Length: 588
Image (tube, rainbow, N blue to C red):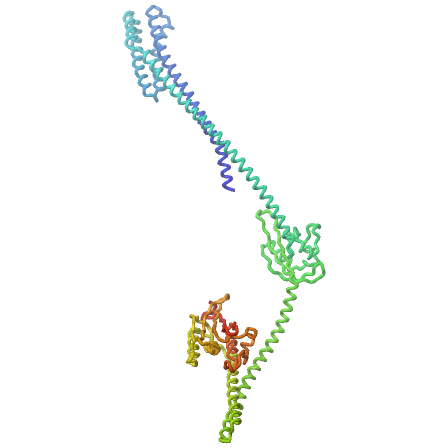
């Protein structure tokens, strides 16, 4: 906008100022030409007057010689002596800027002075009664000091100067006319540009006004379409504009005109604290956010609402202050929160109950495991004593029975031992420290290979990161997963076991142990991590079915999760995740 104003001012200056300057220059040139013409004419006039005065004085002098001695004739005879010096001085002054003329005036001055001197001499001799001498002096003056050629040269030179100056003046006038023509064209062009720009600005302004009107119309439509009640109020809390949702909620007739806020609805806005807060927003420019209250609306329903308000200060400082008010009906949310709080209280009670049950179950399992050890030891010990006592009287069937009892006691002892380990994993405190997962995986691989000396296993271990966790528990995780991989690839001619890691979307580390072993059917995957749950017969793959349950409990206590993917006969992929944290426990 500033550039447009500056351009308009510059155009006005060019349109008005340039013709003025050109016209002023033309006037000055014309005035100077007229002055030079007058100057030349005056020089010529003075030169001619000088010649006339000298000749008139000479004529009067001759009349005196002829005997005409009246007073006018005597004054005419002395006129040259009186007037010639002044005329010569005027010529010197008027030709000072022309060196050639100064030289000619100087020559004329010598001749005129000499001639005037001889004329004075003739008058003096005439007074001395020497008419012959006076006549001779006058003849000598005319013969010795001729002024006609000098005056003619001065006049001719002045006429040449005058012609030159007139030519220059004509040329300057022609140039001025050209400049005036160009200026007129420039004025016409600038006027055309100004008119074009003005028309364009008017068109743009009209278009902007139309767009602004459309934007205001769209804004009103959007305001009316918004389902959240919105109202605009003046500095006295009288309504200026409310949308349909506000009108429906508080029963306002849009045709009724401005209404005071305290009179809207069924005393919905009679809360003095709320009114004070709204006045603070208007007077002190304080914003009101999420003011929760209960209002009885026009339908007679108690509603939980959240009110927000802010002051709208227009650009014009003298414009009135306005208040934008928004209302959010959170009745359903409040009821839902009450229900959620009630459910939370119930859930907390159930959590306490479950915690008590878990503690009782752990205590029970620990107690049962310890209490079962002694009977098992008795069963195994007395079975061996019975076999020793019978000695050679033991037949094959009795020997088989005793062997089944002994093996069963050993198997149950192992189950009890595993159950104790599982119970301890849920009770013991985590000893968090920086754990090198690469070292733990290498150690677990070495232990798994040591029990399978006659097998071909191809291992692929990717570089593994450091994590924060309980080193002994994480060692158990790697031992269980790699032992399972080795065990379930037992029927493969060449076993392939891959260990890798990647970071998930949330930044946690996701470790994977993949093999090309027996695999399993994914429809039974939910049983995979249960205690003593197995998906294969013990005759095919030995084990107690508690290793993966231990893995899940350990990873869960570290804040991660465990899952698996497999296909029968195509191998399995076991995954577990751990938070990526530094030594201080902060997420990396």
